[in-house]
Image (tube, rainbow, N blue to C red; front, side):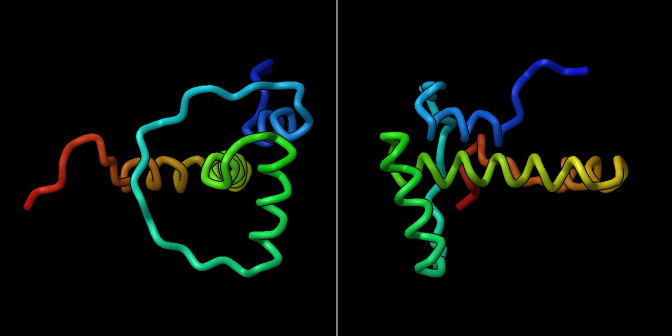
Length: 93
């Protein structure tokens, strides 16, 4: 059994102030329209954790993706991993 914290536990620790999160991955800008109720909650969490909205959204997405993938069959997880697009290299013009 793993003793590593889940992404959700890390996010909760950041919000509670018991874990500090430094360094984030390379990013890519996207556009997303969120319901006001979600933005309000994300903003409150970000303020409590003293991080930006973008940082909090990234942590919450990581935690949510990890939680959902934990409930998927192994075959589906492997297929998603194969089909995930990586943005490590510049896009072709």
